[in-house]
Amino acid sequence: MSADISPTKAWINAKENKMIIIDVRTVNEWKETGIIPESMLINMHDSNFSEKKDFLKEIEEVIHSQPQKQIAIICASGGRSSLTSNALISKGYKNIYNVSGGILGKNTENLPGWLSLSLPIEQCDDKCVD
Image (cartoon, rainbow, N blue to C red; front, side, top):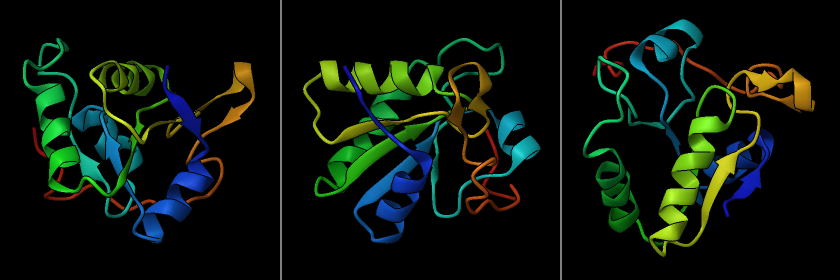
């Protein structure tokens, strides 16, 4: 199963150029909350909210292009990122992490999210396209 990483640790690792953060939320979610600076945006769903056919392949391309980097997957609260991390690990990939709490956090499990920890966020501009 996937290893969890806190939003703070993921940000530190990304800033130290050890980790790539991949945000799998929808375009509307990116626009609503903003995005993590220098993160990669790979929308998990198509416009009908079905999983995109080549979704995992897009992430695998990132992994293969920078094999020395750790990969952190983030979504709104940790559900989609956990599924994605587990799918990649089951395919044999290493150094894959689920950002616990996601962007918004989970109050029921006392998992603070990226926003509640006041970690950097930027407006979603021309990068936020489907």
